[in-house]
Image (tube, rainbow, N blue to C red; front, side, top):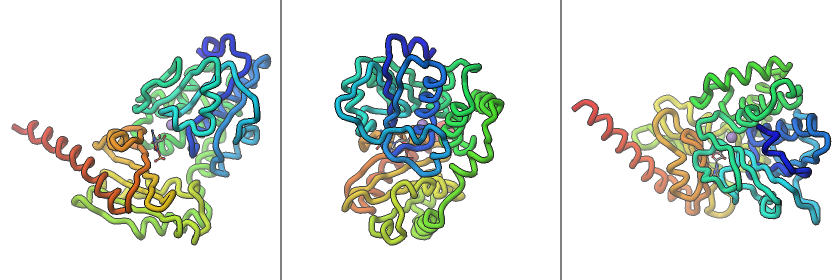
Length: 325
Ligand code: 5GP
Ligand code: MN
């Protein structure tokens, strides 16, 4: 329960992972709003990197700090949706200087880097875990909206296998608070700017199928991003679109962050544990959605990842063969 986590803490910093996604922003704002609504004697602040414009529909988004003012430190740092210390980015400094640290997360790769934690790798989202800590009757519409947004994004609008019956029950409770579900889904998940659609189209056009058409990959260079006038935040959703290709088990999307340095997103449909592949190369994530950074050319990256995908595919095939003996 949140009361226990917040005990003795008058000042609380909330932080999430770098390049914040919907669940990260939703869980941070949801928790922040709840503390603001129900613990008037405590001061909470949220620290996050810049995030997609569409999340500004959450009222408290305006109050998020994108840098650390001089000389601040907190009684308690709560990190949300962040699988390891490095991925806290600039707010890692506040984690280091806080008197106490607590982590709420659902990354399978999270080894428990805070003093105390609440980590459930099977949970749909960190937003769902935050909801579990709250008292239902004290959840305001603003808190409910933020948590609903987080759940929508990490479940791909309730589509992925991580969306459990508990997820739907919580979503129903949030809707009962008055959340405008269709608006959140349309405005923050599906809606794209013209430039975002153009870059998506470009990535789909350039995609290649390999390993007997079970894998698909595509990439965007810095030059292409400049040409279309888009930033990293505009690339969200490309990997999901690659993933839905018929017959594909693994989708790989990468964009160049520096010459021959790629930020890679991995997605799988049913069988391959992409978190294991990401972890092997220093990244992390979930079974069906993970990420990492890799050096080399586009083809080097594909080759290295393919090797690890092949290892898993072979062991799956081996297991299936055994079943028929
Ligand atoms: P995405 O592909 O959308 O960036 O990330 C998919 C999932 O993998 C997210 O849950 C994200 O937190 C995690 N992830 C992405 N990149 C990295 C990384 O470089 N390191 C770790 N540990 N996790 C990552
Ligand atoms: Mn998440």
